[in-house]
Length: 139
Image (cartoon, rainbow, N blue to C red; front, side, top):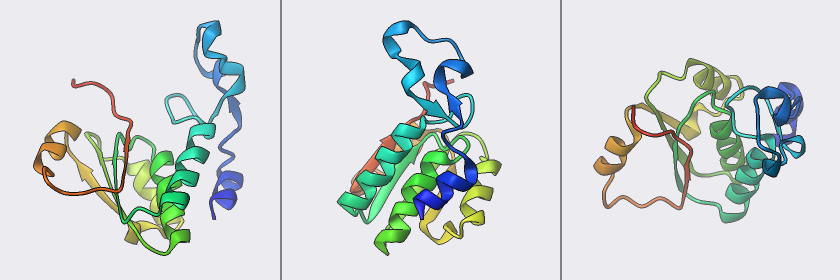
């Protein structure tokens, strides 16, 4: 499923160094992204593989943004045949919601529009098998 999504969305189309400036030590020429600010393609592959391998029942993601990380995680859960992702962002993430719906993954994903730290405090004591913390600092 993930490889089909990667192909359809052309997720590795841009070299990270062509999107925005980097210092040479970051070796941006080795990384790829779909757009400015999205999680790099190589990390999306890693997320997908980690969820495929660890098979968590519950996952927390902060920083939904355009939903590419959300998509990588949810696609792995779909292949695993189980799992629920809670993703949080301060924005409504319309693009992310559309991507999840496009690939029929909405049963696997719950969206929360909230400050991540506030949501996490409210989840005190709840267990997650995997977390992807990808949100920025407080505004």
